[in-house]
Length: 502
Ligand SMILES: [Zn+2]
Image (cartoon, rainbow, N blue to C red; front, side, top):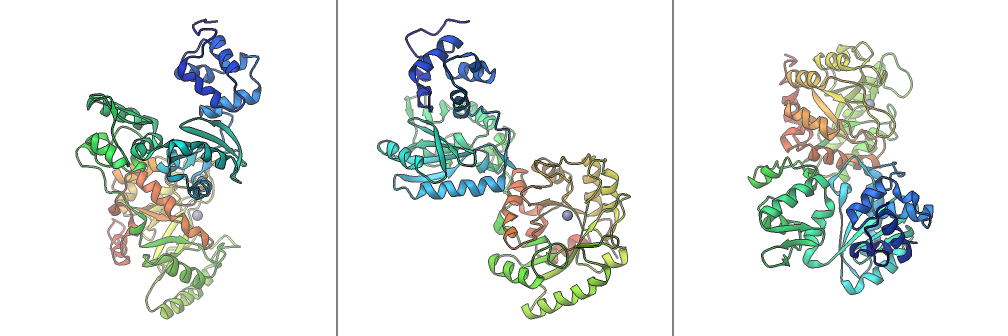
């Protein structure tokens, strides 16, 4: 056992351990003495190596709270899907913004960067130093709060009733920008910002941007000011995963990321003709009024010659077409497009024959079976079909419950680019398929993407934002996303590939 820590004195920075619920000064002394740790880095290493287990005065709850406060609670390997985290996070944000002490509050961490799953909720809060006690009192009494895990001058960690952890990073108006940037991360991105800052004579810290020339924090009321000091263009949170884009931010070459407002329509929707909940008319009127910037929507019920139950049968197709025509006639233009989602069968053939496929405005082909085998050949064959416009949820993953099936993506993306077949970013919270990494690879190969909600109910049209995040994290611009184009332009795309039907 090391004996570096003085038996009577707690090393300065580790005094903050007493901010953690149940951790007294005596227990901090035990930790310092018995583990021989003198600073946070050593403590973090010791906790990661599970050395807290050897300290008799710590209860299991004490150890868990320390791990929680240090964000090292590996028992909580359960990660929340982005959508659920967003709903939970908004509820917290909404609650704390009601407190008069809170001047500003924003999401930080992976939630702000739009990662597909979230470990915990990070929020940066602007609050005056004199109001921090009052804020803690109010946070403790929020209906969402189960209990406070740790509370210090600049940080509060709470456990929510659903066992999720939320961290509040407290700052003032002057340093809000740097603090928000710091806690938005990612860690890898922060490392590179730290070195850019060092080259310019600054230190980038959670408390602010520190000027080494005059030993003062610079005023950074917003993130833009920090970027300006570092001579970098503002980099959207979705692009802050690594260091790759630092040179681009320095040379004014960051991509102009696609935005939700650029979306012109939703291109995968299921109605009560197959497994959806609503009639076409109800969905059309809802989308038309709730998303006024959309110019079209594509109804894509499942269709199959073989399958029965919750699918469009071949003899339903003309009746559905007549219904859509009536709706469009009443609306005065062709707002509702006639699409279909067909199954890619095991041998790569489709669940409807070509003479039916060619009657639709938009054909999505998706794998709905055989999720474990290598599906490269099936996807290639589907892309080769001249009547297929898009591959639905191409990787087949279900977050938390199904791994993506093996696919040779180089081959599939090359084929998609050559045949003019779009790939979907399916925006359902448990799909987000393709994911950000594969989307990046797809656009590098010249493949166009379509962001679809795959809505089966009215509320699910809101998933579009999740798909936008995936696209932004992959660096997609308006030009990469087909459904940011007018329908006339989509018609041109349909006839652009090698498959173009004369
Ligand atoms: Zn599907």
